[in-house]
Image (cartoon, rainbow, N blue to C red; front, side, top):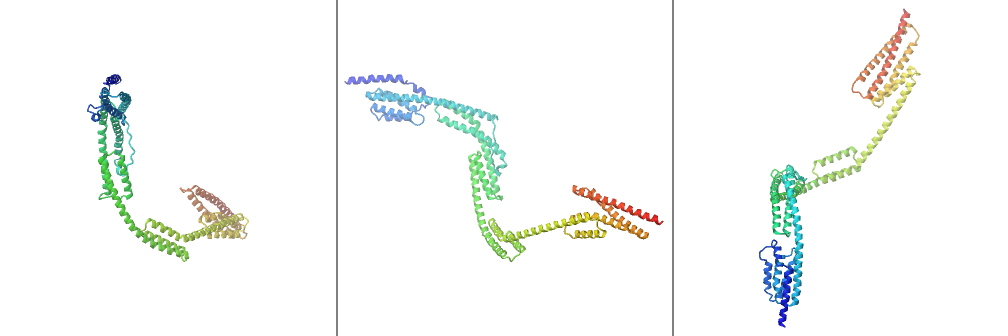
Length: 554
């Protein structure tokens, strides 16, 4: 029985050994992993070997090794294949030891399943690694082309639209130029760093990974030194501008910019420090100095508020004095004891007093509102008086217009009836109208217009007088004297008309006249010429009659 029992395990062990040799070549895993894993002793495996010494039975050791292999494959991230393969190699000699057939079969199935799973995971990881290698190679190649373009000056650089405050405006062109180049370099630098991190965590052959690292290092040699120099130049200029700003507004000869303006400018400078690519030294230095300025502004604001509180008490005291004057004025106006002129004078005095004393904006606004309320009855009264004046003015204008109409009607009627009227009656009515025109409260231009309309009556009156004298009968000597007297009068009137014609001719020929005025002068000149022609006929007629009398007397 013992012999048979001992023979059976040997047969099974031989079968197992043959199976192992067929399924898993002993040289497979060293070749697959010689480039992936270090040749240094595996700490986990050494610890495992020490743990196996605690188990005297081969079966217990196999259980422990298979559990270790499961744990190596199941760990988070990439399975620890080196530990797995070394633990697997430790299992093979143990299967040749004396183990119960049932345990051996069960353990062998687990062993085989774990080996298949390890190969499957290895193939999957190799595919992922190959894909990752290809993608990283494409990314590095694109990065190298971009860097080559940048070095040759073929890449377009868009300048950023930085919102720079006045303190940085002097060197705005320099900031925009450097930051534009830094933006392009920062993109390349971030891509290099990202590719390095991706390369570190990607499983691939060590030689391939080293080649990728060398290419990234060469690309970085074109980016990082230039980027460092630009950052230093930008940082130095920014620090210099910040120091100049602080010296201007917070130094011994500090300016007098408003606190709120300085506060906003400091905020903008702190924002600019975040937008610009500065080194740590410049960023820390400028931020600390701006923080100190911010603290100074707080102290200045605190002092200003204290001064405002003191002024507020003065403002309140002055406002109370003026408020008493406004209350007194309001009561006086309400009682009606002041005339509108006196009340307005008091209002002006209070307004002047408000300008002469110290008052805050709120106090001025409140006092003005109270003063407007106090003088509202006065303003209503003045408005009513103004309305009454306007009404009286309209009535006067209406009466004046009616008077002009009536006067025009009288002139028109007198001219129409002039031929049928007697000399004495026409003369009396004409003189009455002239006197009415002269005493009327109308414009001079209107008086001139009416007198112009009455001017033809002078000729009518002269004709009537001449006819009456010509129709007289009696002694020839008396008639001769009358004709000479009439001739003298007509010549005088003719001379007056000549003078008027000359005056109008000069006025019409003057430069700078408007169209309407020129037409008016031409019209008057035409009328005066007609009168002159009529006067000439009258003079000739009398001279002929005098000549006839002289001929008769001779």
